[in-house]
Image (cartoon, rainbow, N blue to C red; front, side):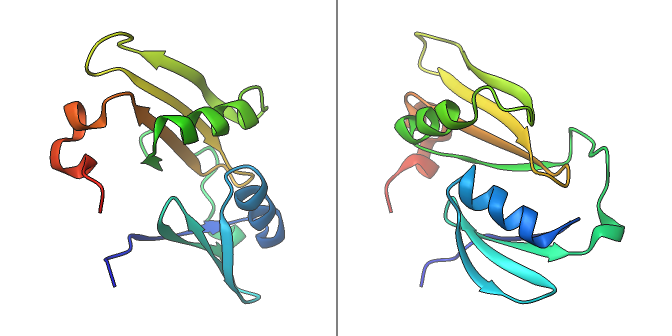
Length: 134
């Protein structure tokens, strides 16, 4: 088995969080218990903890998680969430036409957790070995 990154954080309402991660970001939901649910998101295991007392609101912008994904996948997500009310940073492309061209957006889940989604037109120029297929 390859290593799988795992992240766990509190949400204010588990059913609301599950719906958001499935519908907005395309996560696959695994285990579900009254206290938590696991979501497979961008190849990582994200555990949504039903723990409203520990939700930070507002969430500091410097405390976010995210993924760097293929350009076409980023475009599909940007199309789906592009004008959503929960956008913190709308979809944009920077460094256009250069080897470092990147697309990014940031949104928040219903509990205020911040999620950044990026893509690089030429990922090997920015990420080096990390961009190699597994």
